[in-house]
Amino acid sequence: MQFSGKLATAVHILLYIEKYQDEEKITSEVLADTTGVNAVNIRKILANLKSSGLVVVKAGVGGTYLNKKPEEISVRMIFEAVEGHDQKLFRMHEHPNVNCPVGRTIQDVLEVRLQALQDELLQKMEHMYLSDMYDDMENILNNEESSEN
Image (cartoon, rainbow, N blue to C red; front, side, top):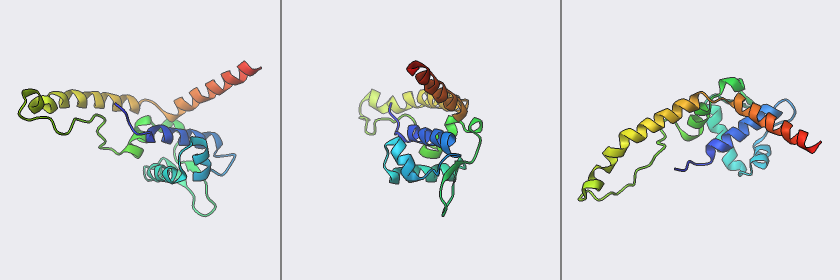
C-alpha cells in the first residue's frame, strides 16, 4: 500500500514552520527549497492546511505560521487536511471477473477487514502529534551535534 507524499510533505512543512516561524519569513519558495517539492505543489498543500485551520498564511507582508500549538495538531488532522476526510486507504482492483466465484466476492470479503484496518490506523494517527515529531527531530539534531564534537 502506498500513499501520496502529501502527508510527509505536510509534516515537513509544519515542522519547518514550528522551528523557524519566529526567525524568518516562511514563504512557499522557502518551503519548496527545504522539501524539494515544487512551489506550486507547496501552495496547494498550504491551502489545504489553511482551510483546515492548521496554518495561517499572511497575505501582503507574507509568511506562514502555525494556527494551533504543535501538541494540538494530530497526524490524523494533517492527513485529513491534505488527503481528505473520505480518503480510502486501500484500493480494490477495479474489474474483477464477476463470472469467477472469487472475483464476484472479493470486494465483499475484503471490505469489512480493510475498513477495520483503516479505522485502526486513523485512530492511531489521532494520538500522534506534531509536538512528538518535533521533539524527535530535535533529539536527532542534538545527537548529530554531539557526535560531531
